[in-house]
Structures are given as C-alpha cells and as structure tokens.
Image 1 (cartoon, rainbow, N blue to C red):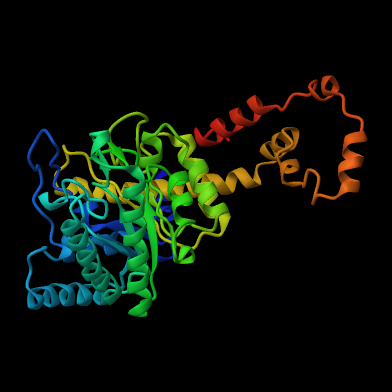
Image 2 (cartoon, rainbow, N blue to C red):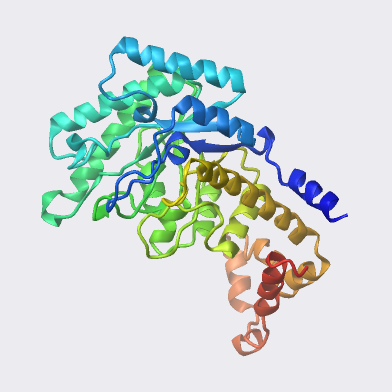
Length: 396
C-alpha cells in the first residue's frame, strides 16, 4: 500500500509541458565556479541540456547569446551553432521562452554597457544586442530580457545618474525600434537588481524599473522580468513586487529561485528558502491568469556533480507543483475561508468612496465616524497566518 501511494505521489508531481517550466542554459550549465574557486563541474553542451530538461518534463529554455554562440564566432560558425540548436529543439519539442544578451562578462563592459562613459562601448553594446535579438527571433523567443549587470557605479562622482538614465532610455528606445523595423514578434523586459556586480546599480528594483518604462518611446512594448533573489537582496517582498508588476500589466517573464535576505545573489534552488513567501508567490501566479513560463534562474550547489545538477532542476519543478497544490487546498479549506472572512479580506476589494463628486464629498464629510469605535475591532491575522503555516507543514 505504501509503495502504491509513493508511485501515485511521484506521478502527481511529475512536471509536464503544460506547466511551462523553463531553465536558462546558464543555470543547468553552471560549472560551480565562484569568485573564490574554479569550476567543479565540466561545461555542458547546450544541446545536451535541452535533451535532459525535456526528459525531466520542462517545456523550454532561455539563453544569453554567449551561452550558445561565442562572441568571436564567425557568421558561418554562428549559423551552424544556431541551426544545430534549432534541430535539437524540434526533436525534443522544446521552445526558447526568452533570450538575452551577455553585457557583463567581457572586460569591455567593466564600466557598463548601455551606460558606459565610453561612447564606443555603448555603441558596441547596442550592436551586440541587435545581433543577439536576431538569434532570439530566429529561435522563436517571444520575450527579450535586459539585465543591467554592469550598469552602475562604485565611485559616485564617475557618472551623473540623469545622463546614465538618458543613455539607458536611448538604448531601449533604439532596440524597440529595431524589433519593430524587423517585424519580430517580441516584447522586451527589464530585469531589476540592486547591486552585484556593481556597487550600486541603475534600475535597482521593480519600482524603479516601472517608473523608467513610463518614460520610454514605446512603453507598451516593455515590461519586467522580476527575479526572486534580486528583490529579496533589497529586503523587499518579491510577492508584493510581482503583484504590483501584474497590477500594471507588465509581467512579461519571471525568474524564480531561492535567496536569503541580505546576502549576495545566491540563485538557490526554487523554494529552498522563504517557503511562506514562495507559497504566496506561486498562489499569485496561479490565480492571476499569468500565462507565461515559470522560469528558473538558479543553479545547483557548487558541491554537486553532474548528476546533482539534474536533481536540482527536478527539485525546482517539483517544489512549484507541491506549492501549487497547497494553493488549491488553501482555496478549498473551510476554516481558512472563515478566517479570511473574519479578517475582512474580501472587503478591501470594495470601493471606499467611488468617483469624486461634490455631493459625495459633502455626504462623506457629514457622515458619522467615531475612530474610537472603529478602533475596537480585531483583524484576526494571527489565526489566519497560523492556518497558513499548518497548511504548509502538512497539518491540514
């Protein structure tokens, strides 16, 4: 009987293409190298990564241009490499869910890419991105992401922020024009991060990026690719960041991983830290109508060998599916429903005053309202939160 239940549970949480799980080539291809030590695993051929992920039940991959095509490849080599991956994707049924550009690894980008003080570097960065957009379009990527890894400063006097934002906007506007001119079916997404590798980064949080998008020539084309680790590094709630991104209609893509607050960018296995926050994130994604991929931007522990990488990838997907089931249990639990009612959760969705009119304002000013009476009630949050914890710990 135990064996039957074990097999049933195994199948219950087995990912399928319909779940839309995707991984960056740089995630499962991570060699374990860090600032203090060399690689602990061999490089993985991108085509092998695609095949392994397909076997695990993933539906897609994402990639930087340099994950696939070396920056110094000839046009003929580029075509051969891209063509080989295209054939592997067709063989496995996998897709490219997102593409991006490596504008941080080569020494040329040490002062930034779109915001480098050197105009020649800025022009090179935009040209490299156009070539990478071509690769993404050729492979069918619907979203192109911009992470400003080197867009920032250590020395405050070295860059005027307004000038840097002007150049950042100029680059995104130009690349929107390129996508439109080439008639690519592609949207652009900005990925905020507060710091690392730069001491202070431009567009450090979801809020900064949303404000920046409003200044663009084609704001309708540009959204966000928020990442768990990046908002958590700032001490912010990733759940709230994603909720506001959805509220603005700007969640074009998402990067999922695990992160301890206040640390360097750890890119841990999804759900391995902050389980309650992660639960509410999954619940939000599943209930919001978000149709995009559930994309994992994380990597296996440095201590793992090649087999451990695939344990990591399977774990990311399994944890998501476990939390998705918990979200469904939350919705069906009568005690949780009663606790939600006691906390007046649904009442927040009701309009407070409606549209302004002079009559409505006069009526509101004259309406009785005793703060001492209003202050008496409790909101029963302790009971509600305890029920959430019991749900997550398997006591419900």
